[in-house]
Image (cartoon, rainbow, N blue to C red):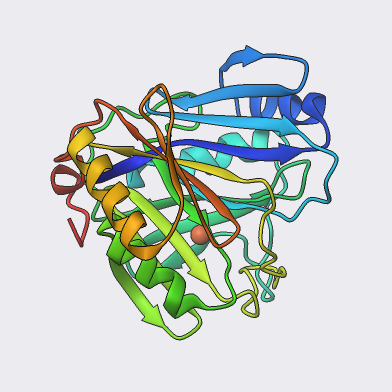
Amino acid sequence: MITHYAGLQVPTVSLQGAKQFYCQQLKFPVISESEDEICFQPTDDFTLTCKETEIALHPVHIAFEVPYSEFDAVVSKLHAAGVTFLDWPDGRSIDQFETGKNVYFRDGDGNLLEIIAHSYVKEGILQPHGDLSILYLREVGFPVEDVVAFRELFVRLLHFKLDKVMDNFCFAIGGTAHAVIPSTKRKWIPIAMKALQPTAMVTTFGVSSHAFIKQVQEKLDEAGILGELTAANELIFNLDVYCIHLRVTTFPEDVPVQLNLPLA
Ligand SMILES: [Fe+2]
C-alpha cells in the first residue's frame, strides 16, 4: 500500500530564496545542497527538494499536518518569523472548519503552502518535527482537466480511496498522503488562485513493499502506461503531467489507523 509522501521535488527560480524561506523562516533542516538543488528535511520521513529551473513556474499546493493542540502555537511562530498569511475575502486568515483549522501562505516562488490540524488525529503516534511541529506532509495538489478520469487512475493503479467526491474536486487518499485533485477551472482557496498544472513537480510516495510495486507495475502495463524501475528499485511513471515515484520505505503501514484517519 501507499503509506505516505516520502518526497516532493518542486522547481525554483532561486535556490537562495528557497533557502531563506524554508530554512530561515520555516526552520526546515537542510540535508544537502548542490549547484542546482537544495534538499530540506521537514520530518524524518519526508524530503522537500527545490530544483533550479528555467521554465515558467506554475505554483504547487502542499499542506503539512501539525498536532491540533499545537496549531495556534505554530501559527504564532510563523507570524513571528515574518510569514505573511493569505486572507479569505472576509479578512480572516485562520479557517476553523468542522474537524480542524488551517492557514495558508506562499513561498518565494509563489507556491501555496498550508498548515492544517485536525481534531480527530490522535496525538503521540507520530513525533512532531522541528520548529513547526510537523507530523507529515498531508496534501499535494494535482490540478487536472478531467478530475474523474484522473482520480480513477489513483484508485485503479494505486488503491487510493476517495473523499469529498465532486465533478470538479476530490481527495484521493493513500495512507497519510492526500492527493488534492481539483479541476484546473476551480480556483485554489483562500485567494482564488488559478489552479495551473505545476510543471516539473516530482512526487515520491512511500510504499510498504516490493510486492506492491510489482502490482502497480502490472496495472500500469494493463493501462498502457510506461513504468520504469530504477536500479534503486524505484518505480517511475507519469500520470497526466505529473511524475510519480514509488519507493519502499520503513514507514509503518498502520500509522493511518493509529492516527485515527477517517478512511484508514
Ligand atoms: Fe489544501
